[in-house]
Length: 466
Image 1 (tube, rainbow, N blue to C red):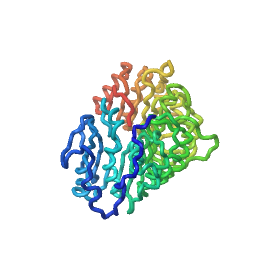
Image 2: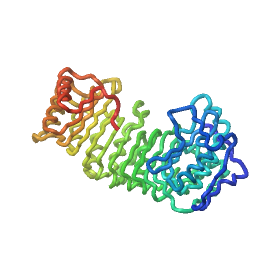
Image 3: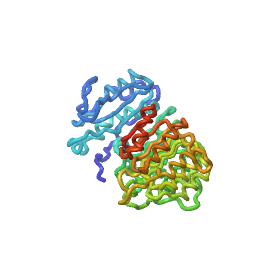
Image 4: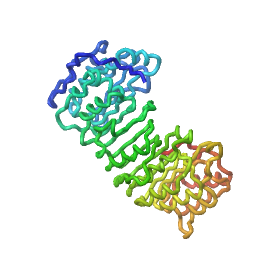
């Protein structure tokens, strides 16, 4: 990928200096060529209504963008006044995320002066680093800015005195970063012992990317939430990350792929994990290659207090590995979401039988076809009967309150509506969502009757419930 950043300038900008925490005027009066006069706000000609700075929820939220002409919003004078005078001491939420205007101007801007235009803003904000609460950065852009201000020398990334308070970080385009040493020097300075939330995503690069080795200055053991989205992550790498993030409470991975952890590897013990979402890489799923990553990772995770589990995009349900995952610590799940998972009625029953505490069940299977054939019908007469009463004459899921299912997973015999009616009678099920609208006449009649009696019934909804 060709970089749009200009080569580092020498000598290094003298403004990349950090003032002491009691400094009251860092950056006041800075400007860049063509900047609007103080107080003037030019509405960028793209996207929804945009407010570059607003105070909300105890945070001063700063959203830095370029308009199609290449000017930065907010201008440096307004930014300085708001941060230093109007809201002195307020924690900052900084966004350099949706910074590029759409349309024909984008290519022109990428060749002229993006880094120069943003340099003053970033220098000023770095000078109040101890007030950073949360950031959303295009990491490739940040790399270009830091290269510009340091000449590419990691030792010239200045140290900020004082206690830091950064709690949440979102980075996109992580795999496009080239100067790993420089980025790690930057990360070393901005990370704090308050760091809890990490999001990495939205990368167009197809190159392998080692998260822990490339971003080694992130305090992984301190994290309580980790989300990897928009770029492929191997099950092997994710297993290593799970071991490192021992305090994690929520983990979301959208593009799992191979290679896998080795058989007999040590388990990733995550005693605080409450929510886990694992989806196979859709490219692998559609191409039927590297499938199995979800189950190969799942069987290595020991999460005794897991409450929510979401699995997606596997074309083979692996009974053995799911049983291994359950046997490790028998988690008492309250929510189970299965998205585009090829599971049959018997496999579904065996899975549900392990989780009698379930309160929410989502079965959003393939929307049209599965490898050229129909999707599996999981709610058959047998499973519907067993969901009402198992072999001991007891309800299979006695605590079930919410059920969401795609229409083509339901056997068109009326058994589904009978099961629902029975659960409503027992005062457990209170919400039913049907993805799609294809139901047999008996099911539709009974569900309409239940809705008239006050049950929450939604038919025709599309998509996967978050």
